[in-house]
Length: 474
Image (cartoon, rainbow, N blue to C red; front, side, top):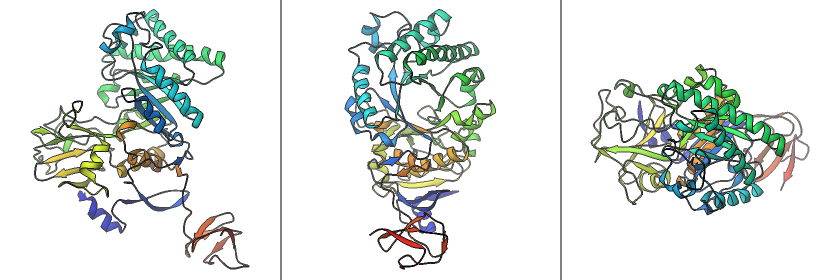
């Protein structure tokens, strides 16, 4: 069933842009998801809240990170020297052996390392993990992992890098993708050998080093990799539960980062959702507490959309890509959340410039739709991000991560924190309610004052001299 967001808000009787959020420990209260800036949180949930930070951004972006909003930063990307290396590292690699990390004292990694050291001074709890590979940088993984000797060159290079750059806390392997069983077994070999090296490094430094990996979650990705062998040596698995649809799927358009698989996509022969990705991993026996669900801080879309056989935009066909590029580096059909907020959502999150924000229960997701040009834009709406956080909590997953920090105006990271139950640093106390039971130590606000319950109480108004409430702050 499809609903406009404005209709949903009206039926639930709360203002546009205000969504009810809460957890088992507190009553639900409205939260504004469209404040357009990063709020300040406390990491009270014990869940992972992570984000990639891209190294093609100015390193000063790290200065803008409020450390308590995150548990982990994944620094993307570092590269490997060797066959298939990215062109940008040719000069560095000319002075390196094959399969070493492509870094030196003059590379951008050194500047980011300094910035991350400053971040860790502000937020000592945060873990900074360099990510190796990525979509355009994964070719060297195949020859590097082919033999024990070549793997050892890479592993030693990682160890040496961590020794020289103590602001980093491990390694993230982003191999996209092992394409057969042989490569999948080599992936597991690499994880095992990195852990063996980290065990020795930990004895030397007295620190804990993390091994993580970003993975595809569709059955086609998972079938090639022996996660059963690899998982015991890994700390977290970052499930890239996004990019399910894109420029390549004009004949079967879908929401690229939805939590649930839509039947209209399956009717066209392909569909996927984040929850299915989780199930795929759990069916292998991978512990839920190592799985981190992915959030996208960017959109994918089309225009010239014709509804599919099921009568929905999802599962339909498109003639073009949308949003259109506006900068030389933009890709047609892709836009960062900042742009979506400014050009499609608007300040209240209900749609501007002819767009409606719709909800489809089939994928449990929101998308933007404009009738005039048949434009469909799928993105992680803050409400959907909150639901992903609640899904992670309900299914005892490790938490949430996102790609990537610089694409967000704050709405998405805020929703991630709300979703896993983290408290705002400036969280307001609940308003006293006459029909609620309170016990000793409970705090409430009443007529602008804060009261603390001295014992069990029900329907006793705060403010009396001899009652169950004690004035805490005037």
